Amino acid sequence: MLGKRYFLDKKELVYKVYKPSPGKRIFKFSILLLVSIIVAAGYGLAFKHLFGAPKEKRLQSDLEEIRYKYSLLEKKLQNVESDLEEIAMSEDNVYRPVFNMDKLPGSFRQSGYGGTHKYNELAGYKNSDIMLSARRKTDRLLRKTYIQSRSFDEIVPEAAEWKDKLEHMPFIRPVNVNIPLGDGLMYRHKHPVLGTPRWHHGQDFSAPRGTEVYATGSGTVTRAGWSPYGFGKMVEINHGYGFVTIYGHLSKVDITVGEKVTRGDFLGLSGSTGISSGPHLHYEVHYYGKVKNPVYYFHDELTKNEYFEMITAFENSTSK
Image (cartoon, rainbow, N blue to C red):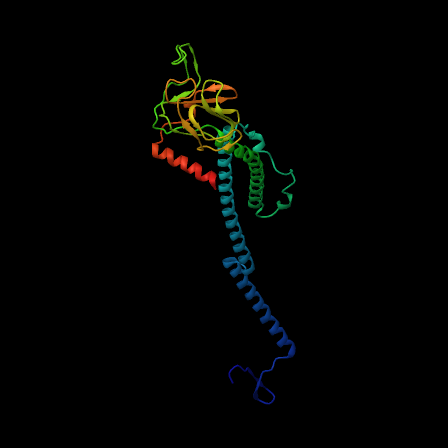
């Protein structure tokens, strides 16, 4: 039969089925097993060489993904660092000069972070380079962010004080912008009423009698009534921060001493009281006791409607 081996029994003169001894069968099986192991190992090595071991392949894939994520992280860190540098530049060139604050020293902004052995734990790995780079950039950003935060802590109170100062400084005209200007800050060789030479320390507005007069900045009324300086009925406001304004020759005063006013509040009506040659408003600005030219503290670019819209906005904001 197929698969069987026969031999001739010479004694009996017949063919019999060949049956190997147990030893031979074990030897044969061992040879086949060894050949199978060798062939399987050969196939395994060939597969690993061509395709890599599954676990190693998976680890390599994970490693590539990690490297990609680190590269994205480094780009984000670079963008954040660039934004921080722009903020620092704006602070040094805009905010601090406006508030009369010194710039932060460059050495302080670029100061180090941590010790020399800070990153030893990340050394010795296959990808130590990307981990060290990301860690250093992160620590540098943390340091810069901390310094910037502390710097802003210094600027915020200055900004709040500056905002308050802007509200108190005399920054608008005391009357309608369409009213023509009269004599400004000048030396008069002949006073129009007294006839003697003297300084004119303010700015006159050729305002008809009864023109509304407004506070040019927030402050406290220190005089309201008849003036001992020849201004007739007048109002004097102390704005703080060294500023004082005077409104003279009024026909009516509608404010009292000690009253708090804000920019745009109604003070009274123009007139010709005191030493005056005709209806007008005399307006003065003093800064720490020195006379200043009022025209430097307002501009004439507003229209009449825009001026009164501004006055209305000031009144609405203070009435809330």
